[in-house]
Length: 289
Image (cartoon, rainbow, N blue to C red; front, side, top):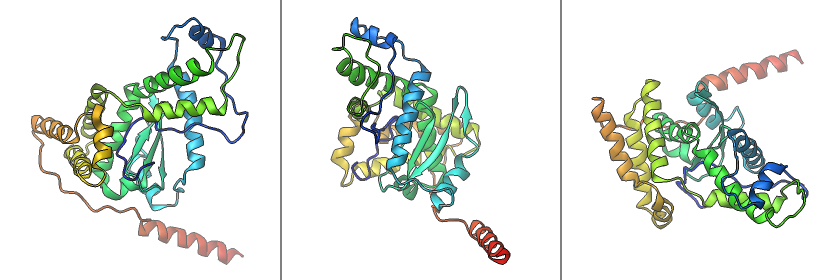
């Protein structure tokens, strides 16, 4: 991965299993559809969730995940622990201890936030960014992204040449799905709708909606720096962050609540109260011995 990649896309997943013979059953229905050259085969939310769950489990195993006692994990849980479900989706959160500025959400409701993002955004800005990612799940963009990758890589390349009742995908074929998803991008419309979802999420839950504009200002400023060429390429099919910031500002102005946002202190360390409680537990255990 490239440092400070502001991908913020759904299903940034690398497939693959430790066992060389790892497989996932495709089923005759999907196979038959592809053999007949039918591109619009049935692919349900459950299908997307199952494959996404397997992908995220593999990613969790390969990346350094912040333990529950870590400051980053405590902060994320404090912010989103009460936002684990919505209309038709259930969420789970973890922090990847990586310097990249990134976050993603998958069709099974897994939300992964990079510590690099938490280092540059305060609580409200983080709520805005992750609210955007949740929007992709709620709007089924995650499912559609998985379907496209699955159809393009797994079925067409790996299965169409088979004449029998083939039962599974190999590690290599799963890797192709991961590459396809990494290369995929959401449409401008999908991104705009996720932005609106984020604004409404902040508004509905009583958070500062002006933080959404601030978050996009941060991304826009970063796109002008050393990583500018990469960001320009990545955002070629996405709304410009400056424009997205302006759109967020207009929404707040329309609601009569706009006020230039001032970033708050960013704290990713373990709170003193938690340290104190942990110390007390340690003392008690020592005393018992």
